[in-house]
Image 1 (cartoon, rainbow, N blue to C red):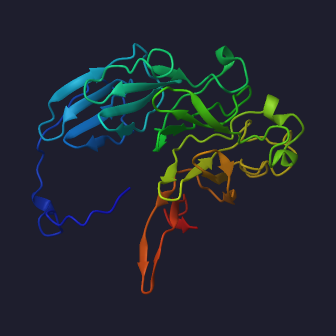
Image 2: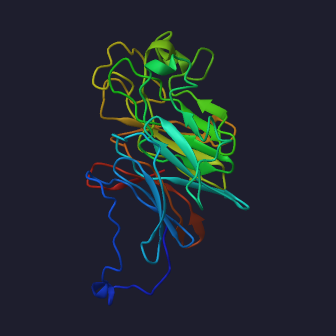
Image 3: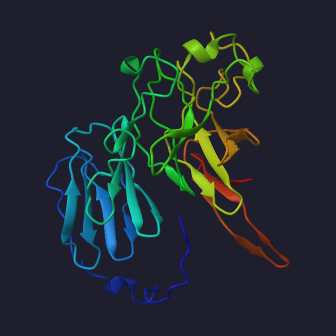
Length: 301
């Protein structure tokens, strides 16, 4: 979310705005996505998770990518990365992340296996038995794409690891365990062996990255079961308190390499945080804003 000082459209003329063009995806179903605009190209995703590029000025279709998978989960957007002439769209389609050439929509074959990575892998469990979907776009930090995922709210469920992959190769660069493993910070706040049997405590709503400080802000949801926590004795660090299933945590972590910074637990926080700049009389204050369910009033930390 960015503030613009552009003044061409203002309160006096906004009522004169008229539709310039529309684009029909040709599909039924709702759109939860926020399209990207890079230069003069708009990138979007359809209800069944086909990725497309349009001329932002005319709405003309430039290319469309069909993975062959019929997406059945909501999808809130795409990620973009570039370095020199290498420009990529990183798109989640169910449990896969695809790397596409931003100019042509063609797969980048050196990324993962033939242009995609499978988020069911790299979790320390049998990939074929895991259920995860990337319903919110990952965030880009330098040459990393950092992702969470939508996990089941009942057991069995995969752990809600936050993972960073190399945008060029698709190789896993680091993982943050929201259900701490043996020997990791916070393990003593969970039952013994919880990381082997429990699940979720996942980031489904998206993240925000402070590019200057190299910090990623990660809101997390409940561990499974969502509304039953009697088998999770303890504070369950990095996940909501087991006695209050409507709570969610927010983790602040170094974006590269992975490390814990300062976890917090905030009532009813389920959405991504927004980074802002507030100019005070004698200083510039840079808070992260977190919208809540209570009258949409933001919390600042």
